[in-house]
Structure formats: structure tokens, C-alpha cells
Length: 384
Image 1 (tube, rainbow, N blue to C red):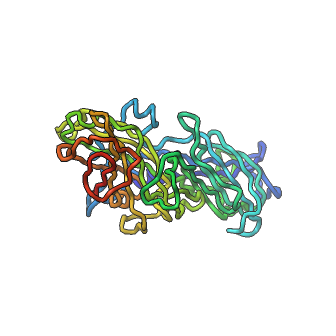
Image 2: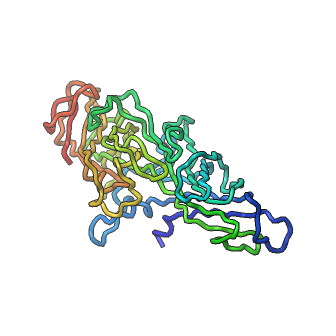
Image 3: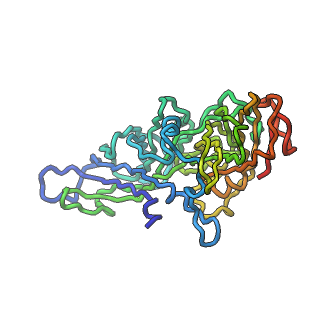
């Protein structure tokens, strides 16, 4: 049942307009108006993050997520999980009598709501659907490329002005995180005059063809938290900047496969004090980001973490401000956590602030990462 909830079945209803006749004739014209019911998205993270962390033990992200998600977080970054789109982009490709043929042209339509009516010639069609991007501030990070090839649509983001130092040798700067993106692609949809594969709907007086189009996420949510034990006012805040490295720069909507270029993804984080962690009062620096996932991977096609081919390490860095006005960038190797949560999840770091001296000089992002566990100021790198 839980897996069935995850699979969101799109319905493509191919409807011949027959007027008032009691039953549609079996002979139609060379082309007809048909109705497309766009697939919807309604994902519960507890269902989607269906990892088995150990034999017989399923992943429970809420049990390890202590940062929470209040109204301020929603105002800054939106809902913690995926939301249902209301506006869609639909692309139709006619391949005539050749199933799985190359695309020689495209019919592009933006769909508001769940129904689209258009004209279809007899033969084979490919249909690509994805959600139209909407953001809180009206600024979109994702850039779509539909012109390089008619056979695929790719999505990527541009770089920020923040430097990228960790596992992104091709790029000087970190990149913007993408917005939530879902896609479904169905090929060789046959619309034929004999109505083969159609089912007659008596109530609506139409013939209907149902297809299993699963609108799946192709951007993946990561929830990050740095839990500060025994802080006692030493770290007073995070400056808002954080990043996660080794993630894919792009993805292909038709296949759901992430690109091969590894980048650092920039995102925002903030600090909450006096949070409860199993009866202990702790301070937590938390944030939420989306990525295109691990390079060269369609995470929706993977069922186990040991199937993940990932040559890139993953580092998370957060700049912390101390009570004496100094700052330091802390860098954590989170490779094992990212690979285990290959389609998103909670990434947790725990620090005992009794073991970390307060810096006496500013560090911030101007210092390169060092292998030594602790230095006075500058950047601290931790093997987790």
C-alpha cells in the first residue's frame, strides 16, 4: 500500500468527440481532439524515503530530525517536503508510424489544472510532462534546455558568487540549488483508428486509453543539521551560508538521470537554541536544500545504497559566528550519509563544543580546508 501511494498514476484519456450519439462509432477521422489528464504529485517523505537502514529496520527520518520546521522556516524556504504542482509543461512528439522514433518536431503546451485537450494524428506519440517552476520570491534557479536536442530536455542551475573549494575542481563558484522538479515521460503511445487498447466509458460516451505515467521527483531534498552539545552561548549564530559538494550540476527530464559534472550546491541555514534532543537541551544549525542528486544516477531506479556508483566525496560546510565576534567555517565529510540517502534524507553532524576552542581571529570562507582536526580560527575539517 505504501509503495502504491508513492506511485502516482497519470491518466491519459483519449476522447473522440462524438456529439449526442449513444455510442461512439468505431471509424474516426485522420485526426481527433483528445483529452490528456495530467498526472499529479502528492508525495509523503516517509513513503518516498523508503530506505532500509539495516536488515528489517526502515528509515524513519522524523526520529532523527531534531531541528524541526516552524513558520519562520516555511517563510524562508517553503514547506519541508514536496508540494502538489498546479501548473504543468506538456511536450508532445509525433513519430508517425514509427514507435520510439526520433523526434522531428514538438508541440509545447502549458497546462493549468489537470486536463489538456489537443489534436492528435493517428500513429505514435511520445509525451513528456514536468511541473512549471514557481518560487516564493519569484526568482527561478533552474534553466531548461529544449533546443540542443528534440530528443531530450535538460535542466541545470547557474553559479553563485560564493567560492567552491570542495570536490568541484572544474568550477570556481558554488551553484544555486534547484527548485522542486518532477517529470514523467511515456513513449510509443499509439492512437489508432481501430481503437485497439482503448476502453469504452459508457457514462462519458468516450473511448479511454490509460497509461502508467509516474511523475517522479528528479530533485532530491536534503535536511541538514549540526547539533551543538554543551554550547552554552559559544556559537551565537550561523551566518546563513552553507554548501554541500559532490552533487550533480544537471539532470535529464526524459530519463531522470543526473549529469556527470560534480558541483558544490549553495543553500541557507539558521540556528535554533534550546532544542530538545532526547531530553537534552541543544542548539542546532539546520537547513534544507534540493539537488539534482548523485552524478550519473537516476535515484528512483535504485533500491539499495550499495548499488550507488558514486566516485565523488561529499562535504558539507557551515560558517559559525562565536560570542567574541569571530567566525570559523566548519567542514564535514558526509560522503557515507549522502550515499546511504541517495534520494534525499537527513544529514546529521554532532559537535561537543567543550572540545572546540573559541577562535581568536576570524576565518570564514577565506581559509582553505585543512586536514588537522582543530585550528584557532579559519576552517576546520572533520572526518565523520
